[in-house]
Amino acid sequence: MLSYKIVLVGNFGAGKTSLIRRFVENSFSQEYLSTIGVSISKKTIKNARVMIWDIEGHTEFKPIFKQYLLGAKGFIVVADLLRQESIIDIHNHIKLCNEVIKGAPLCIALNKSDMPHTLEDKELQIIKNSSELIIEVLKTSAKNGDAVEELFLKLDKKIKDNMSK
Amino acid sequence: MLFIHKESGLLLAKVQKEQEALQDADMLASMMTAIRSFVNDWVEANNTNSELGEIEYGGNKIIIEASGYSYLAVIVEGAAYAKTYTKIRNTLENIILEYGKEIKEFTGDFQIFPNKALEEELNLLINNNNKIQKKKKIHPLIFIFPLLFLVWLSYLFYQDYKDETLAKQIQILLQETPSLTSFRIDVDVDDAVATLKGSVPFEYYKNKTQKLLKSIQGVKDIHNDIIIIATLTDPMQVSSNIAYLIRGVNLNNNTNLTYSFDYNTLTLKGNFKDYKIKKRVLQEISRIQGVQTLQDETKMLIPPFKDVNIYFDTASSALDSSTQAELLKASQAIQGLDNNTTIKLSAYSDMIGNINLNRKLAKKRVQNIENFLRKQGALSNTVISQIFETPPPGIDAQKEPNKARKITLTLQNKSN
Ligand SMILES: Nc1nc2c(ncn2[C@@H]2O[C@H](COP(=O)(O)OP(=O)(O)OP(=O)(O)O)[C@@H](O)[C@H]2O)c(=O)[nH]1
Ligand SMILES: [Mg+2]
Image (cartoon, rainbow over all chains, first blue to last red; front, side, top):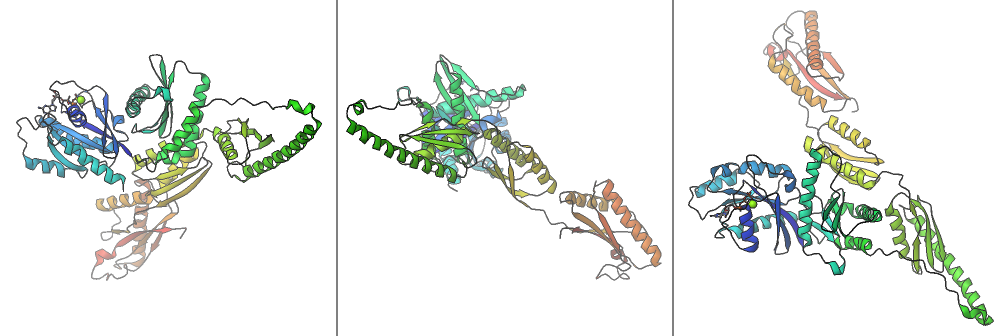
């Protein structure tokens, strides 16, 4: 049995809570209930017990509370495809994660892909190339479930590879 | 009772009373960790020197006892006695002493983590029913039958003999156990029941003695009357002090030091790139109370020093700006070396003009460089110089006079 912690970071309203809910309970809600502090979910992925930390999104007035990132084995950085500034902020989040846990792998979720958006697929590669820590950049939708499973499983695989080293 | 990894909030081990099974211990451990770090951060920001120790909810209480890389959360129904706190503290102390290394190196893989052994240790805390001393039985029939009395007497002698052998066996075992030899522990065996007396600095040793006795066949029961006299520094405090220091050093200096601490000797490993930093770290460590010996297994990884070549204009001893920049860089590198390093300046000549004047000029050049290093570079190393009346080896002064007017800065180590 393995046990590890991952954390979802990103700007507020990007869909962190929704992605987790889709992955853990396979459900979705249109309603927006902003996360306060932290909320924790658990999911067993094959032989691993994964504790998923959903933290309060970054806003202009409130930076992310670093302590919540401690001890994580990997991160998912979530941005909102419809909000350019949340995409620009991705690299700040990567920086923060790497400051707290040096070299921890990351997946990037560009969320709300079910909505009409302008980001072209070739830009995904550009984002991916921006840091060696990124193992995957995916367009996801918590609403219809697109690429959500893949997002968590890719990170899971990388973390397990790292652990067995 | 939950034993939790401090940073990640992952549950390392859990123990509970059967009738009060916890619903979802994993989640509780994570949530508690989040609360703990949030509260501690707030407390720290307000400059109060304490940690979250208790959470109350309903009629229940969660007692939190932290140490090093982990903490123990004990959920108690109703009020808790002062004794409970001491017991919790002691249990944690034992766990850290015994499994501190495994906890520190916890990767998330429970195949290599001794959680079962840990849980056994924790179970002791829950099922800690103090044993009541059994009274010696006296056989009533012996007064009636003398024969039986005789049998009893011989039995007693035999028992005595057995007790004595047991006591000796225990004494030898205690003396042969390295961590216990330094304490005075007396053993008295009566009716195969061993009573231990003496004093040790930590609960750990007391329990270790008890465990040791359990391994001896023939011991029916153990009364552990060893008392704890805390003369030394709390080993957990010591080890968390070390952990914080090393982590700070690594963060600030981009080093990758690792250490191990066996509650006595601190072994330091890794690489230093700078002698000054090493000196500072060793100094800091010597300030931590409770580290008795420091075993320094670190290596110095000093980047190789490149000799500096300084060229001059004809008849000039001035240092141009690029030379100054180079000298500053060199002085920084030299400061990272130990104080045994001597700076050597070798001055060469273009052989144009009067020998004596050239000599004077060379001296002036050397002096300028030394002054510059002392003033701008804040160097205190010894500087020695050697003045040649010839150009540097391999240079024809007539063909390349500008390459001949040169001073080379090299390093010499006294210890070599
Ligand atoms: N169309 C669509 N809407 C989404 C998707 N994911 C999330 N939303 C909506 O976006 C809003 C915010 O989602 P949350 O999951 O609460 O966002 P969050 O990142 O957890 O926000 P904070 O907790 O405030 O940091 C909600 O109204 C969701 O219904 C998606 O994939 N598609
Ligand atoms: Mg949320």
